Image (cartoon, rainbow, N blue to C red):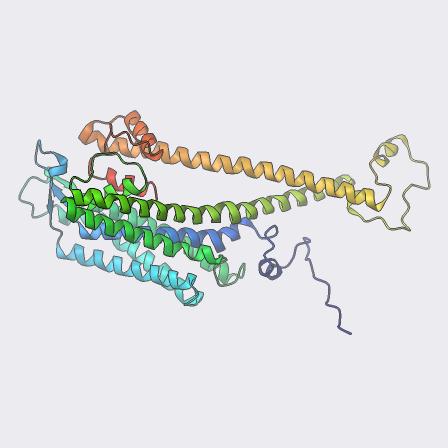
Length: 435
């Protein structure tokens, strides 16, 4: 006869051991913060890591400085070649970031072990961020020297601002992976990403979409005679269906290529968004809601126990008395009205109580989700309006309301084209905003 397995020790707080919770995917017992660390953070880093590298490429292929003569149109400002030391450091940080992305991709594909890939990914991104921050902090001093025109006529090109966004994303991604790595080292989950097969391919989908975006910009820049970053801006507003109309193909070849390029690009973007939606709505929603149910259930049981109303939580056996042998007082008789008379009635009351807890947790989760979505949208809208106001105030005299209006027609993909940003620091923000 097979020996019976020993009873599972629930611990002092009545919870399953950590190993049992994770291995059996007990979502309602796994704290939401560790689900974020094991699943959401790797997905965010896997999505934004290639985006940061794409911004690094933009910061490398175009000079950081431009000469804007008095009265000259800013779109006609001439580029000033970068010094060799800036190009070398920029190339090194890009190479390190690409290595970090490759190891993260191999780790998600389970080709390289977690303990090997993660330190390389974290160090690569942190070093890339530090090198870019060092260039941004120390570069303006040397870059103002050796000019054959007044320094107040020098402006920073879009490339510098792409480098700024790349540094921010590298630092955030590396920090996310540090949390994931430390959680695995502490034993809160296995040393592997808690991702499905489709979610593991999200990083590859993002890389393919970005390559499509960058190569398309290169092709159209050659066909239409645009600058590369201007062509990248055009490709971005085209695939995200904003379509301001300030840049449009003027050659027959360019117009012919727009049709297949936009169709394939928009479909690819939709697939990436669908994968992100699957992670957030399907897995994240179930995890968070189940965790809320568990916390609500624990609070309800604790409150009922303290008040002495936990009679429905205790099974009624056949030998258990269902009525007191001593006549109750008037106060006790009121409490006894709610005591189930049989095990069936007790289970029915327990079931109804759990349904009530689930409904309350579901309602709370929906309110929280709506608050997070609305708050995120408002932050992006209001802060974006402030950024566009500051960027365009010097060149076009935009007020805060102008930036507010521009953000609305941009983020809702209306794209009237009546307000257009100059090709300076505003364009990189407009490109990074949708991502």
